[in-house]
Length: 143
Image 1: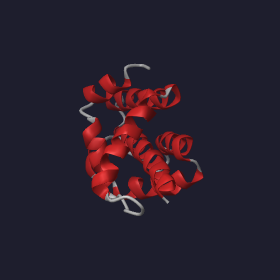
Image 2 (image 1 turned 180 degrees about the vertical axis):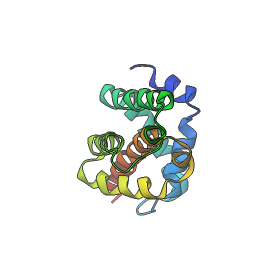
Image 3 (image 1 turned 90 degrees about the vertical axis):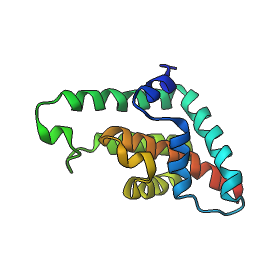
Image 4 (image 1 turned 135 degrees about the horizontal axis):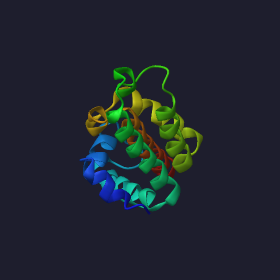
């Protein structure tokens, strides 16, 4: 839906880089990292097919575009009072992985591994939420 993979690629966000960021904080339990990476990749690709996830990702992309156009320098950064970006990330994480994914989202949001560190305020949280939801489910299924 919304050609979300094409839209992510247009933002220089490749699925393999999302997987790499996810694996940067992976905690093996039940399955080693080498075996987990392709499982995480498949889970991310399936999540991106979900119309609810693709809608939230596109919202984050559009908000990044709006923030780049904004003349107010504060609006182009990630001010502490801006919560909508966090809400998008948490919504993605919880939709995919339930309550446990909220804690996983916090880990990725704070550490910002890999590509997450390179993204703007909306996309970093959206991608962190995508990873968090997918890794949280993966962890739950491995135990």
